[in-house]
Image 1 (cartoon, rainbow, N blue to C red):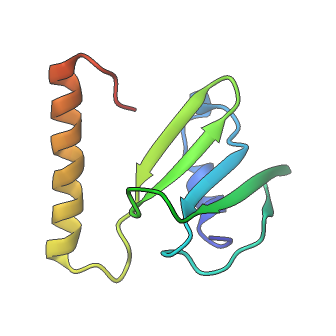
Image 2 (cartoon, rainbow, N blue to C red):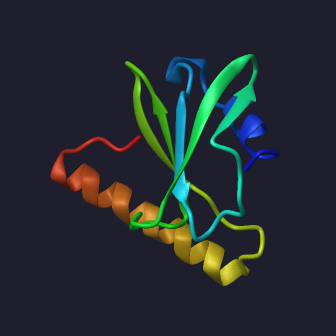
Image 3 (cartoon, rainbow, N blue to C red):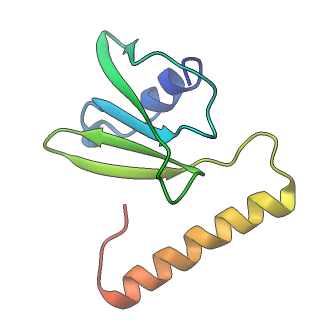
Length: 103
């Protein structure tokens, strides 16, 4: 988390604002500190054991919103990666059909 998060946040669109908090599945990620300084900003890092989608990272930006990002683990096989990507494609199609927004 400490090595990957700064690069992830640096690559996000500026319109997303400053991410202040990150939530991940505690069973998937190795230990990390409760806070991390990223580009002169403190980002709060939190774990959950109840998250229903262990392959996501939840980013929170005050006044801007929440973004759930799919993470394909580096150890995933091609078949596993494709299954994850297909699940997102299905979710997007379902949300469009239901008239909801997916970010």
